Length: 244
Image 1 (cartoon, rainbow, N blue to C red):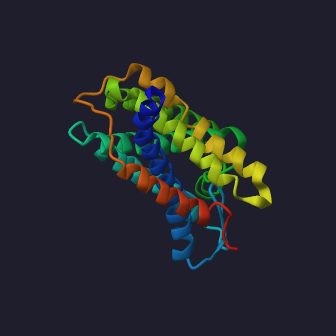
Image 2 (cartoon, helix red, strand yellow):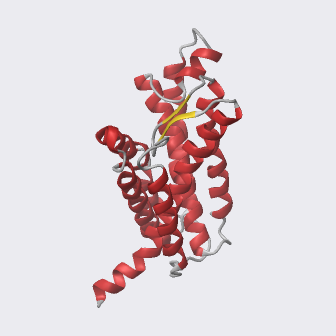
Image 3 (cartoon, rainbow, N blue to C red):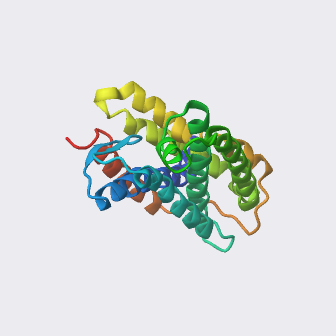
């Protein structure tokens, strides 16, 4: 009975983490890159959990994924307001963490390895500029700032639920990525890096959690239902990859 109660206590937090990561993937890949591709008159040649390709090469299409992340960062900050209900606040914290770490991590990743969404725009807009070390410095700074904001926004009692949300979100991403048969190993690895590794700072940031306001762990089953519906939709559509 005690074990059952423990699982039930963590389930809403895990569901909220799953919702947050699904929204993050759709915001970056589908609405961000995909929307920009279609708006530019192109068509999508590849869309899965972590990869996107368009028939057109445009710097704006590459940067649109980050714009999607920024929108979700702002939405997360609004929801994470201390007066928000606990479930909405946890969703806001998870949205903020996944997307802010995604932006910061991608800058570091692009600067070190010269791959990803920032390469083509940098080479187009600032040719000749040593943008890679600059990207790494900015990325590290944003990563540290994100960790600080998580500590400031997270009430101490919410530290464990937020860690649960992080683990669930990372697991959900990898599970959905495993559905892409043409390059399963690559996509699983990229998913683990994009969400799991990139957001690892959350695990350590909540050690210094000092957010204001009362906190009661969310208990509504609605979170679980919404998470299941959203995960199934994202996994079924983007998991195997588009077009099919």
